[in-house]
Image (cartoon, rainbow over all chains, first blue to last red; front, side):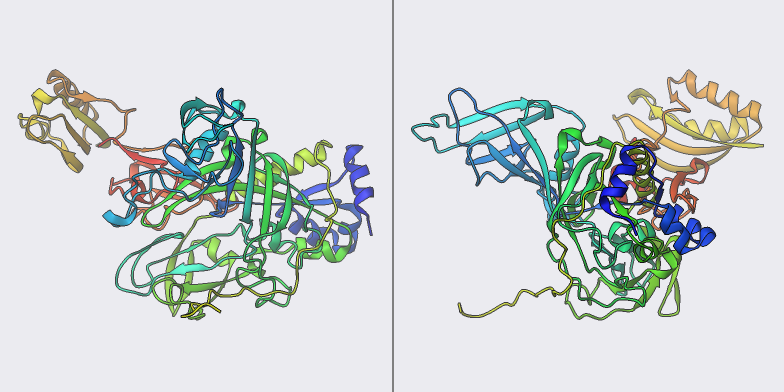
Length: 396
Length: 136
């Protein structure tokens, strides 16, 4: 048994034993659970993939004369201006002004909010265009100017939903191709796409949210960040395996961090043909090995994590709840799964390679004493469901 | 016999000449065209494999250069930008020849085997990060 304080003291003295979530698997096999739990202080988990519920608050500072921006665009991408005078929220999935979307199906969606965020973090020069109705103290009615990340007072990423605990494996049983947020799905079960880092993924290594909670320190695209709330659609009451690992979506995290400290390699705009734009982001979360039980969960391996195979031609859009079967991440990562007796080639939208890179970066940062752990100030809910949207005919 | 992948850029003035005919007839080269865009009064592009004796391929390339055709082995018609690839693996099921494949199942890093690429452009349309681009 260890405490956060003891682990942090070992990190600060440069003596902490830190392993990644893939390294820990063999380590526990070799040393045994009890011995490994006594030795290992931290296991680093990570994920990298498109996370649509991402965006950032930006503060531009005040022009002379002042403007209370009521509508604004950054590189022709609309930002939300319904907050204080020069504060904006830039969302990952916002399209560029005049993007034809799916009018020429399937649309290309080559540029949008996610790409603006990528360019901002990469230090590129962006254009701000804003309009206002003008007020006595904010007389300016229009502004067009150019800026970089350095020019902003604050650029704080605030992502309402990241790190989905698990995710569907998408397939298509229909006769026509589908263009989805999981990429192009060829007709008649010709391919499948998954989106999770499996045995490296943060919430799959802490399935009951014993260490990851509100206030947990995280690595968000290289910047020190934190979990500020449960993520939207956080739904812990789901089907779980004997190891308590969810066999479907389940938990989510709301994350925040300072964009000025982020690394461009881990903040990438995403274009999904026929679907839209998004932002792929890298997240690393350390798990303190407080006891053998926590270590046992953190040593979970791909073959013990199952994901549901869902038909995106009917069952997903119509929300029938039907699942074609379950496959594990070892099968998914082999490149082929079997569904309805048919062998299907598998692609992915989550990058295991990038997740691995992040897990190593965070491991080394902790080992050097540069990243301390924080105990959650509040647990994530363990008992709640996800309500559907009811379409009613009359107001209540 | 070797096979070499070539990407030819035709200046506007040369698009009328039967260049491929001469490559076959005069130099005994076997030609496999992946993609071509040769329209009147515009610049032209041709992505092809040539198979033949090394000396003949060299002579053929020299012949092309006399027309002002640009033969640049480093300027590809289909480019995979390794520095922008996130190794997500979305391309894998869309690449019919497995030119894009997982190089190592431990790290799940993706590699591009240029020789296998037939320039179907499926990756250009499908890559979420714009890693694969076409010159034409």
